[in-house]
Amino acid sequence: MIVTSIIVLGLIGIIGAAVLYVVAKRFHVQEDPRIDQVEALLPGANCGGCGRSGCRDFASACVCADTLDGLTCPASGSAVMKQIGEIVGLAAAETKPKIAVIKCNGTCDLRPRLARFEGAPTCAVLSSLGTGESPCPNGCLGCGDCVSACPYGAMKMNLETGLPEVIEDKCVGCGACVKACPRSIIELRYKGPRGMRVYVACSNKEKGAAAMKACKAACIGCSKCAKECTHEAITIANNLSYIDYEKCKLCRKCVDVCPTHAIHAVNFPVKKAPAKEKVEETA
Image (cartoon, rainbow, N blue to C red; front, top):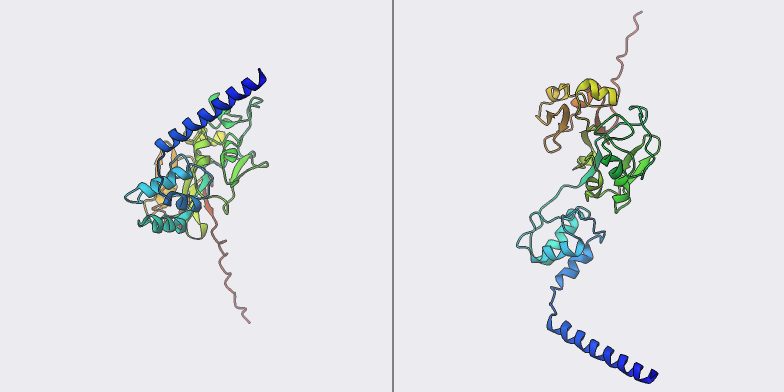
């Protein structure tokens, strides 16, 4: 009985292996070896920043494409895309590196806490309830979904402010945090020369008085920044200012006139105080 069972199972295994071998040979698809070469250059994080399902899918798209326009890996940068272009025989477009910015500055000391949430500690769950712990309807919920979603460890929660922070030397601009934020307060912007950039750190679309009641650092849509900008880089929509990073010349005039300090300038050299004129002593 035992011997018969072993023989039968062995025959079934041999027949199954033979069938699998024939099917594998019959339906085998020969892949372009360049796909492996391109994939080897990619970070392998499968972050989806390229708009594809993963690094191998992106590599396959590059090999099969007639042009590399619209195909870019934000985690790799222009240097790697140039190498990919050499492998597939196509010219890679020059791209500017981007970085995530948090469009909220509602720290714990700037906005009141009206409730305490004791459910699942995720922004997605808290957002589904319609409100957070503060009165701001568009501000950061502070549960760190963006931090958990970052495949590069480029974000962390600041326990003092209750807000997420971007670690600049690790952020590759893949956009995973942007997709994870249920309130869309994270944006990808150009890093700018030497990392310098100017942006509005607020997402509150309420009118001035209501916005200030919810957060002392809110944008009130006063239009002072737009009037000061000579490059037409600032627009006002839904009581909220927005700075177009492609038009912005980094002059920082808008930063100086913002009454609530909602506009942030990052990585700029510290302005030197004007030298005091020496008063000549008269005899």
